[in-house]
Image (cartoon, rainbow, N blue to C red):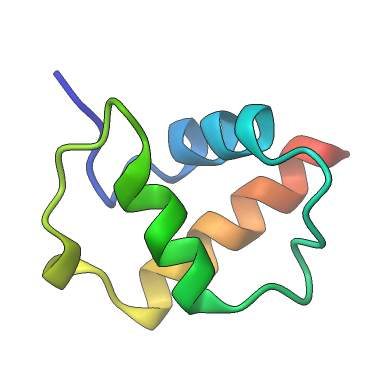
Length: 66
C-alpha cells in the first residue's frame, strides 16, 4: 500500500533520502507539497493536503535529521 498524507514519518524518511541538503526550516510549502506528490510510493490526492499536514511532515523531517 502506498503513502498517504497521514504517513508523515514515512514521507519524511523518503524526503530526507531524496533531498538531504534542503533547508527544511526555511523551505516553501509549495515545494514540500510538490516533492511529496512526486514520491514514487505516494498515492494520496494532491488536493487532500493542508497546511497542518505539511507542517507535520516538515516537523517529522526535522526529527529525522536529529
